[in-house]
Amino acid sequence: MGKWQERYVGSIRFWILVAVAVYLGYALYFAVYGLQFSVQLSHDQYVWSMISQNSLWWQVMYYTSEGVTGSIAIVLRVFAASFAFYAAFLYWRKKDTAMPQIRKNTCRALLLEAGFFLAIIPSVIAAFAYNSTSEYLFYFGHTPGEIVLFGTAIPVLAINLVIPPLLLKLRSKIKAEAPGNEIIKWASLTGLGYIFVTFWFNYTMLWAANMVPYPRAGDNFGLAFLNAPVNMASFAITVFGLLGIGLFAAFTLAPAIKKEPTQVNLTYLGIAIVAFSAYFIYNTLVYTLTGGYEAHPSVWYEVISPMHNANLWALALIVVGAPLTVWGLTGKHSTVK
Image (cartoon, one colour):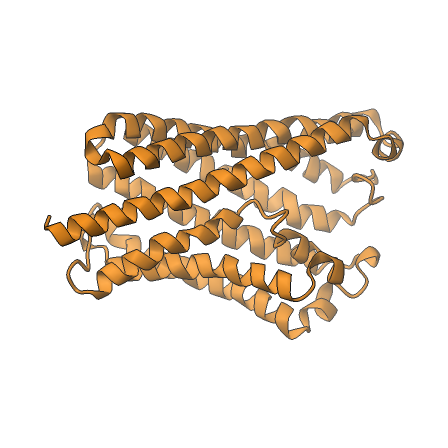
């Protein structure tokens, strides 16, 4: 590898560290925010006055899924992000000489990230159970069951069926010190799993939840909400645009999945990452410039709120995608070597 390439690889390693730092920062924010919510929930008399009107089984399920396992999940992600950050730091500063430590900390991060998703399984159970009851959900009275079904039960179940197995498979390959092309294959499949399931399918289902009639939401649901140009654009970019990004990423990573990572076009990979990151930047700008949740009290605006969107760390991936794109466009290194 020439000096120019070494310098550029070092730069990309630094930007990977920056992206992981944002992931850690968001994990810490949601841990603090979520734990405060859990503590408040444990002694909130108003919430108790609503929940206590329900059956005992629902009271237990509600407080378990909202307070206990939810808290466990966000703490697990903080530890996952911490190990990932340390691995990225070693990758930047010590490079290949620290590979045993990088592998060890990456394995820890992957295990804990899988634990994050598995810890919210009680929320999936509660969501499916709620759909067949007349119980109260938090302090909103009886939220239409379809909102909970489309917004939580189905997408989070899909995430748990796909993402933890991929994370654990990737971890097993790294821990066993499998050949590089084997690890890259499973890293690619895991990344695509996130794009298609955690992001595209999940957000598409949340749009479906936004279509459910809900008197509390006024005109912020269904076709009345969708007919607003900015909302229609956000819908199209989510349902079709994010799917297109995923398909383009799958096309780009196809050689890596076939264990031919040297054939991956870095320009295309960089473009896919930039486009994916731009999706989150766009939604954040839309939320901010249109008045946020107060102006549009709806499922979708709650999802894209910077205060509620636990996936917003993904916007930082632009600092990785942009250098990859430039690197490929220079013509000096258009594929992985």
